[in-house]
Length: 277
Image 1 (spheres, one colour):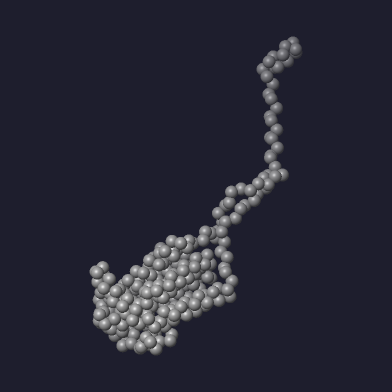
Image 2 (cartoon, rainbow, N blue to C red; image 1 turned 30 degrees about the vertical axis):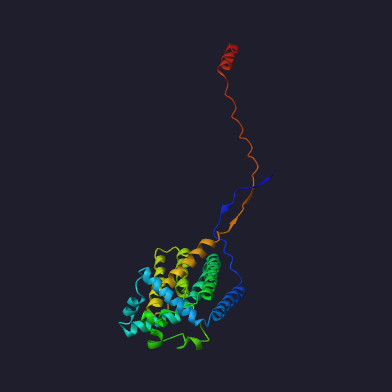
């Protein structure tokens, strides 16, 4: 009895969940490296404001809509601007964390892919923050925008950037608020099959309006984040579902069916009849 290996057959996704402790250490480590790297870019005040003027002039040359139009809509209501400030201050990290936790528990294969893409996006953003410090539009006099967080609250930044020990306020480009929100939407669309999954795109859209309307980012900050995310998605592909080789043993050849006895030929019948006469 011989065995043979047949072509690989498609099986349901073999989802191997990475060790939880390792993932926690990895994510926390990446976050600390990023925060430390942003602090290295602090203090470049003059360069950050020069770059801000360049970005502002580039947007006017490209005829992009003014950030002030979005802010004016938010400032039409004290409640609306307070909600926008709260959204900016409280949604960014918790939403990303819940997204990763859900993927880890329910879609391990998508979790690994998403973690890699977010790490690549964040690393590229850190390089840009170091090489291109940028003051946000709320600090740029030429923009004539209101620092809504300081005026209406809540705010996650110190009133004076030079005294802010928790964040680098000169790291506006790219906008990771928008980049992470866009990846959350992409990840949920890819990982789920509901016909309503495209509604996840409302999250980056709302985030974009918030970061621009609160004068924390320029339009070009979001465009830069989109470009970096696009490159990361092109380079880092979603792992394929697990496959396995199915080995079967060939069954013994069935015994041939016994052939039916041949019926007497007509000639035999004639001979028999003649003999009886």
